[in-house]
Length: 199
Ligand SMILES: [Zn+2]
Image (cartoon, rainbow, N blue to C red; front, top):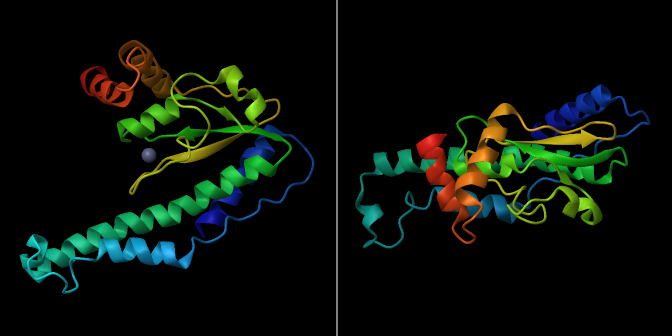
């Protein structure tokens, strides 16, 4: 469902861009079963009897269940949302009319997500990536890194379109440049502090 909704969104964005020629969005493959199993096992691990000495195992079952429920919700949200995000990213990669994509972060997003969103559009081809790439991160690996309960989305950008940062992302970019960029190795921490103090 998440991948299908993402495909509908992609189609609508593509229609708005008026780029012509037909394109069918390929849906992202489901996550491998062992990945799903691993994260769900992690989310519920304190519910099952294991090490009797483990501190968390001594909590009453009701509170362990509550933790398991919260964690299960979080990892499932990521599994589901990733399907949609991956569908858009893959489509942009194979669609000849797409030039790149950007990350959209919600206002309540964490500082990592805000930093990724303020990076703007990344070109899908490595050859042109350097032109607009700034020093935040290279490649798209970190642009496409999401955490549990992350509500960031991926926005495709098509030929003839010019991507512009939202007003909020422009402000995040300004804070990054002023407070974090001059400190390689410590940029995320500095950016987080700048967001807290000036954001
Ligand atoms: Zn996020």
